[in-house]
Length: 557
Image 1: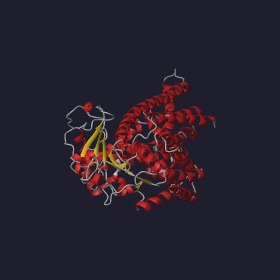
Image 2: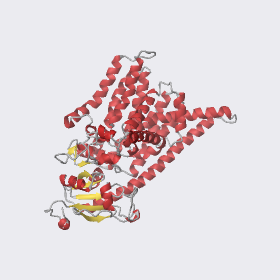
Image 3: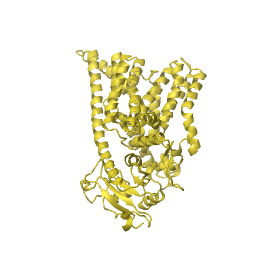
Image 4: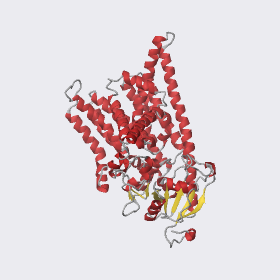
């Protein structure tokens, strides 16, 4: 038990360093989970006073716009729920948000070691795989965020491992796997895909060509029951509150958009018919692009490309191995669905969030593949000492992942820090202007709720008249714009190509500089260099003639 404990402590230290370098939530997923956790800790239940995306309210402007709204119409609750005990104990602090993700995420390293040993790898190989999982390349910075990367990696890998053991005759592992799949689904909607290898494996054992181990029907039933025990109460809540198990998908916007910016629009009504209307050429090209993007992300982020040949070599060598069958099935299913259904979402984090479940088994195969490659080479290079060369190349692979993890963390901390600095500057600007209860429109309402305490809505990806309508209906009094995160209609205002609407009055702006990310019109004409644009602008939103704020005296609602 000393070696798994050591791996756990190493992984925990890596996640602590990564998380404490940037302890605040850094992007919309993380800010949303923290926002919901704060609402739960404050006794408000699953209700929030900001809208990160209008898919949370049906994908369009509601007939009766209101805040707060029921939370989690799109994202699942586990990443918020696990923060609550720590927030109750330590207060709603960055440390309270991060601790559960560090503690749970660090289990990935000893779990990877156990998977490797179960697959027949040597102790040294299993140690190397565990060390890879402790600092998994360019995935590393995300494991220090209050997001479900740190949850889904161990939960997904554990589910696939239990499935493999179950299909080899371990009934208890198979049954317990149902519970793990249910908990993983509480982290991500597509966690349910982890259950497919269980179903396929059991059906294959009982098919026409049945042979070898056969799990009893009772094992399959118990597995399904434990899955429902884990996920059932949440599904009942979704039905009671939204009338749907997957509320954000019911409008069709998630599935039938043809470009990612459409996800943030309240206009149009994406349907299967509108999706098919783009024509078969663009449709097929987008599916192929999504599939290729998924493969590239998986190859680049956790595997840094150089591990891919070794993983493929070992995967082929073990193609009939019972230890990796569920991993193959989940990987193929995830890639297929990413290309067929969620192609436009793939480059924006959707795929990577789910693909991290493949990483532990992938590192086990990588270590095995390095050994296979060295053995093959040693047969042709008589002067090679195969065991020694295996250790050297394996150590080099571990070191490369660790160095890349450190570099990725440094870059993420720099970029996230720049964004945080901008948003904290906006918060300071609004502190002297906004009243309690005012609402703010921004690119990331969860982040601004975190820094300013103001609820609000996301800026819709629509024409200015629609932006104005949304602001009026939700009683928005302030708007924060950042050039790196801005909708098309307001990007033209930001760079001066379109006059400032008469219902907006600028009250503050940041210093010149491109800030994090590209210029707002990186792909179009920009009348001035990006370095001359302010890093943010704050506007008063003046939509009523009787607005008492002095700054609105010159506005035209």
